[in-house]
Amino acid sequence: MASRGALAAAALAATLALEPAAARVVKPEFVTGLLWRISKPGVKDSFVFGTIHLPDPRVNGIPKPVADALAQSGTLAMELVPGAVADARVFDLELLDDGRTLESLIGPDAFAQVREQLGAQAIPERVIAQLKPWAVLVKLGRTSARDGEQSLDQRLLAAARGRRMQLAPLELPDEQIAAFDTVPMDSQVALLKHALDHRDTLDAAIEPTIDAWLRGDLAGLARVGDRMGEQFPGMGYHYRELTKHIVYNRTILMHHRLALPLRGGRVFVAVGAMHLYGSKGLLAMLKRDGYVVTRIW
Image 1 (cartoon, rainbow, N blue to C red):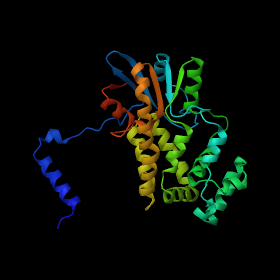
Image 2 (image 1 turned 90 degrees about the vertical axis):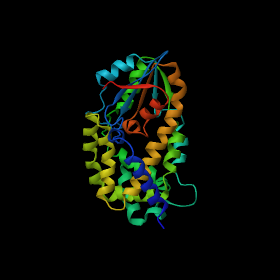
Image 3 (image 1 turned 180 degrees about the vertical axis):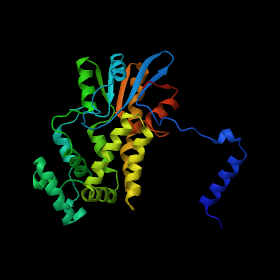
Image 4 (image 1 turned 120 degrees about the vertical axis):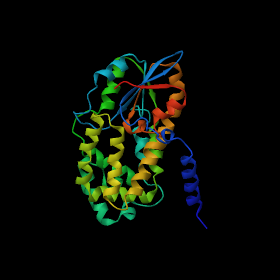
């Protein structure tokens, strides 16, 4: 007996065979472009901008089209607004609280690497011992940042404050941490150990990421992660889990939080560019809400 999957595939193929050839070609949406106008009759325009979370001088300047859109806006809506939750609260949520230790999860060899690499951040050893694997991944990323270099998000926030714009966080630190916590523990462990063993390879992925962003290539940004999974057999599943929980699921929350501000118009939305990509992205969600989504840059 054919499996349900095989029967479903056969039924889909039969349905497509009855359609005109032109109808079978589905042009992918939202694969290029970083700045978009969000319009609806009777509502002042808003804007959505895909940022990049890297403190690199090649990508942290505010381009003129973005500055112009920001000047037309009264509210900046971004992923996180600093100070929304006390640092002590965030610190507590980064720690294992079920009796396990980081070393018991990743093994003594990997734990020794973590201790060495996080030593530069002056994190006490007792804290390192209790960190969740995802929290270590985040902190390892910070060791690659340029000292004193601001990210594009930080510059946008400073510009908005200079204009006395309202600030609208699209998620709270607790919620972002909860998203990381939902990544299965086996994936957290695999991704951390992979990062420790292939630091040079991961660092090398920064260049194609920057290049894709500079070209406004959202599909290219997505392929950077896909190639990482393809390059290392067995890691594809874990990278997909990370994308599902950290990109797609958080995009749903951001979309929900934007519903009310967008009704008043003049909102400048700044989120990581991967949250804009494709049919699961924020732009597609807004289009389904009835907004006209027009690329500006």
